[in-house]
Amino acid sequence: MNFQKRKQKIFEELDSRGEVDIKKLAAELGIAEITARRDLNQLAADGLLYRTHGGAVKVNPQERPHAFVNKTAQNAEVKDAICRVAAAQIQEGDIIFMDCGSTVFRLCQFIKNKRIKVITNSLPVIYELQDSAVSLNIIGGELDDARQAMHGIIANEHIARYRATKAFLGVDGISLNGLFANSEKEAGITTAFAGNSAYTYLLCDAGKIGRETYLNFGGLDIVDAIITNAGAEVMQDYEERGVKVLRAV
Image (cartoon, rainbow, N blue to C red):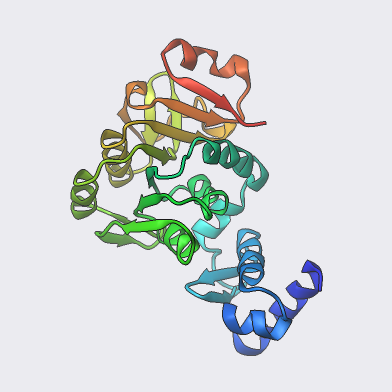
């Protein structure tokens, strides 16, 4: 059964029950659970359903689309290209920080078979990496429902107890003036991750380069490398400031 036929069956199930369960869906369609999970992730990325722990629920067209689902769906091909480069930097045995950015979330699909430890404040990352080869360390704190992530003083204290070999982070903007966030709590998490990692990667599509938003919370010195699809000419000034640039094409 191809994806389009599976997609039709999934929507029929959602219309009749309002939700689907991965195990039941796999059994009914005669497919592997990993295939069912991948189908639901793809439909969620397209904004056609909401992913839940163990399944999915129907999107109500009268409600505003879930912010995180929308963000993961934007520029999906570019984000995946960036994440393939990021995944290539990860070695067996690494301990990595992953934040709640929509690009960072798409890294999950490329690292599921790696024997590594992931420390994260992101609920979608946790759900995506459970039952994989990855060992998870879940950061506690206050839940930001819109970001689907933990933030706050307790979250920052949790991060401070650990040391990672690498951090994979997102920002709302980056320019030669430094890093930018849309809130102080997001800035606090990013700073905590970067400060406790031996090497910090920023995953940024071209739209984030040169963008300055609400809060300038740190300089370029807290970043070791930027993985981006932005052109070489655009990134030259960053390299001259000592930041390594890995281009995703």
